[in-house]
Amino acid sequence: MTWMNKAAGGFPLYVDRARGASVRDIDGYDYVDFALGDTGAMAGHSPGPTVRAIRRRAEELGGLTTMMPTEDAAWVGEELARRFGVPLWSFALTATDANRWALRLARAVTGRPKILVHSYCYHGTVDEVLVKVGPDGAQLEREGNVGAPVDPTTTTRVVEYNELAALERELGYGDVACVIMEPALTNVGIVLPEPGYLEGVRSLSRASGALLINDETHTISAGAGGATRAWGLEPDMVTIGKAIGGGVPCGGYGMTAELAERIEAMPGLDLVDWGGVGGTLAGNPLSVAAMRATLGEVLTDEVWTRTTALADRFGDAVEEIVAEYRLPWSVSRLGARVEYRFCDPAPRTGGESAAAGDDDLDDFLHVYLANRGVLMTPFHNMALMSPVTTDAEVDRHTEVFGSAVRELAG
Ligand code: PMP
Image (cartoon, rainbow, N blue to C red):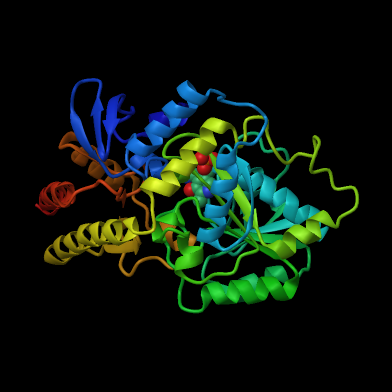
């Protein structure tokens, strides 16, 4: 993809093989992989149970895509319900599609035209979400939005994360169908909720008649049921993709029974034909077999104890180095995910977070680390722990990060 050329150093590494938390490139160099396909490979590369399930579906049972559900679909639906607390699930092939379909349903059921997002959010290549709050508070289209069908400020209201007064004002117009959010921002660096923010979002959205959609695609790092379960949140819908298929394209959106009843009660809503919600390959047998194995045998509830401890080991070591060199940097943690930021304290809004970015420093660190066998998430200083990442791999990062900082400081 063209965007891969944005990789630090001017070109992406080409992969020869990848297993667990390790990647080998086509020149034969080995890396510890903390990018893990930006969460798509959070289960580790090619986890055994997922690979066996793919083989079984492809070779023994057959049926890669059928436009008919398999029994695995029921199992995965129940498991997602158990984890995220919303009982009724449909499948997609990407998180982008899960979000697009959730947004359509939200607009349909509320009869309202707009959605509300946080400034500098990312929910995939969804037309409506590429907006931000400008320096003077203006609502603006994000720069570089390619071929938008309409200016997204006509479809979308946008507020800074952690700013309840702005949220209350924008919801007050009464035209917002839903708030779609990551419970913590992860796509402009990690931005964590201040105490009371998420409760405020829930009560304000409820009071204004807007639905709340939690996009857990990245925040699943907070726990087996994402931030939704870890923090006791009560969304009307949850969307997810990436990690739950162990690397096989997948996605899903779930909703409360109450919302499902409202949707079903709507006369003339076309959910069974070409109404814009659904796709031919969504929920295909291969994708669903991969989700069942990954959720059932790889990314199990117990795994987060270990991966969160690894992320803490990583974050603690970085904090020590940052303190030693008195850098104005900080570390943000989200369960199995950890990130260092070039500002201290850590940013509290997407706008602050974007302003704290430093592309040259980012590129330096990525190239320095990659040249010494450590891969970080591209365009972020973010590290994600898989169930098979080891202490030694974390310590390898510490060692290389320490020497990068020493050279910078020198
Ligand atoms: N939602 C969130 C929170 C994401 O971080 C991303 C991708 N980074 C997406 C949705 C879109 O995922 P995909 O590109 O797999 O559709």
